[in-house]
Length: 280
Figure 1 (cartoon, rainbow, N blue to C red):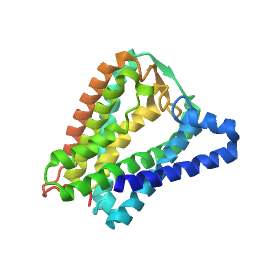
Figure 2 (tube, rainbow, N blue to C red; figure 1 turned 180 degrees about the horizontal axis):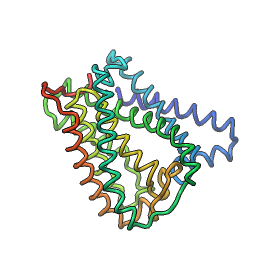
Figure 3 (cartoon, rainbow, N blue to C red; figure 1 turned 180 degrees about the vertical axis):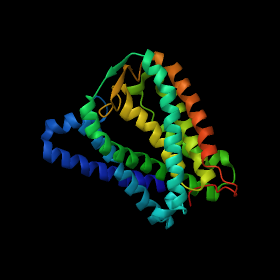
Figure 4 (tube, one colour; figure 1 turned 30 degrees about the vertical axis):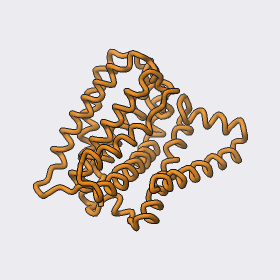
């Protein structure tokens, strides 16, 4: 019931946003915007896609408040200072690790320029703010609300940690875009969800998971994007698309980097006190 209500509220927000686009840009402009938001668009279209996650954040907050009496702070975590600290530590720590791991591949892979450097710098500030909105909304929904609600009711971590991660992974199932790699992408995203869930359980806030998520998406959306995916704000893009059969080995490498980043962030957020099981 909770997810259904949140999905309905989110759909209503996105529909309203698209109605505004239709009124402002007309029928052809609406179609061009919609196509660009799903891949191959320009900076404004990608920015609009990221902005649409405001609806997810509002829908999560509204549904959690209506059904469970949850406050916004309870979805983030009671200790906001710790949340901010863990956010910065994981963003900077994992961001540095992921960039260092990506650089050798960028030197040998078929990487193409995307945005002109001047245009990219002009969009960098707004794009980072919108990415914070996007990853914050997803972490609020999957870890701050869904995981913490399950953790309050279930004793087995395999359930309260695994179920939100699996739903998160399945939400990224896109065979039209990823082709034969669709289920491999689901697996990689589910692994990401498990890592984000563990960081949330260990810290008691979504700060660490949000910082980890932001570092990952900054690299994948603002620095080096996959051709034909969400590439409107990136400085470079790959010479291959998400449905390239040769992408599978890179997904395995990406998974290894995720696990290394998880180990790093666990050390960065470690505290001697007993750990919580969710952001409540």
